[in-house]
Amino acid sequence: MALQNFTAIPRDVTVANGVAVHQDWTAIPEQLDAFSTQALRNLFYAISFEATAESIELYNKTIVDNAVAMLSEVKGLTTFAVYQPVSRQYLQASKDRGSNVLSLDPEVDGPFIAGIILSMWENAEDDAAVLEFSRVSHQQIREHTKALGLYKEFIYLGDSAQGQLPLGSYANGAVVPKLEMIREKYDPECFLKQYLHRGFPLA
Image 1 (tube, rainbow, N blue to C red):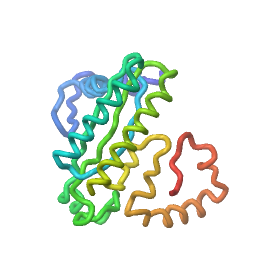
Image 2 (cartoon, rainbow, N blue to C red; image 1 turned 120 degrees about the vertical axis):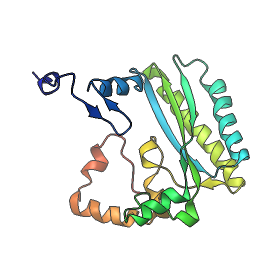
Image 3 (cartoon, rainbow, N blue to C red; image 1 turned 135 degrees about the horizontal axis):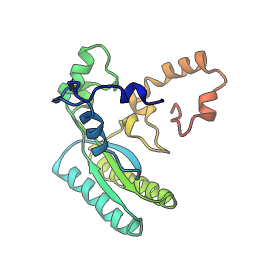
Image 4 (cartoon, rainbow, N blue to C red; image 1 turned 90 degrees about the horizontal axis):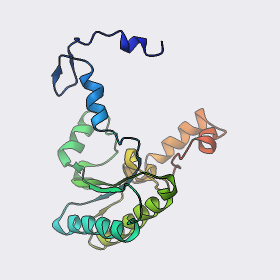
């Protein structure tokens, strides 16, 4: 009964997902399933830097070398060095629309790579090892790209991991006072801070 609203939909309903038109609505969940992690555990760890040949080589080599050295015994492991280019045009379009949700200045902050150290694995007993690998890799990439003048302080909230402080990286921390005012108004007892699973502090 819980799925009746879905199971009652005729299969031959034509739907579009912004990329293609499908003659059968079940094509949409089938596509989503193809991109799922198939019940693997996963961790995203965000890092940003300017894109140069040197920084990209450093990013790739650090992740590969550390994965081999630190995670060789982790069952079912797959590790990726993910690249998400953020252009000046992208930031300008966001600013022009009046939202600028990333709170970044197109001329000062762009362009850059919003990277993700992404890992997937099978067993919970390896969680701590994967988190430590991600933390160490991030620290090494940060130190080396900072020495080259290529590191970006921005940490994308949606790709952040336990222990990272993404909120303070938006507009170099300028958004934090507003968030603190919202918290004081709607959550003065800090219920979310105390009970929300792995929330990010306002720092």
